[in-house]
Length: 212
Image 1 (cartoon, rainbow, N blue to C red):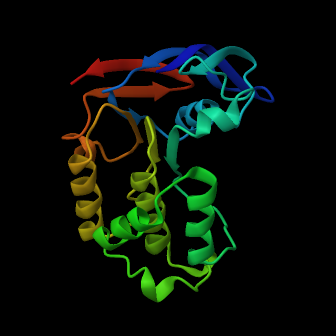
Image 2: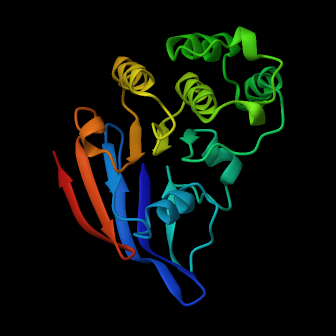
């Protein structure tokens, strides 16, 4: 379970989250929507423990994502909108993920193939040098291979062509289980068949939260 309790986060005089409260439980598949600057990314980063709140708190299965960050992140898969500037080779990155997060290397490779990423031909290439679409496919493959209770996707298909988007959503449907699945998206039509809840944010507040 994710519990967000009266969460406020300010950057200088700007209020990014304004007394936000919500709960996500297993089986929830959520589309988190809103204009740029609505507070969506700040909420996600607060859930991941990146930000210290000005007031209120976040609990992940009863744990504080700041104080207990390593334990909390063991149970979360996260794919950001912009792939991080990782300088490891693809092979080194996969080996690192296998060792640090206990993710099956063969399963990562399996999902890479399902995403039509020629992983064998790119093992010695720097992750940083890959195209945006290739980076996104690899990060998605890792997120699907990692045994997580919570999966968070921040605009996951932004760098994917239409066929890769179809592959991504096909794989998600095949792996539906009792998890929390959270999409930050501007493309509701793409995730509409996957979500059972739609949350809309504006000016740092949740203005609607509807079951669908």
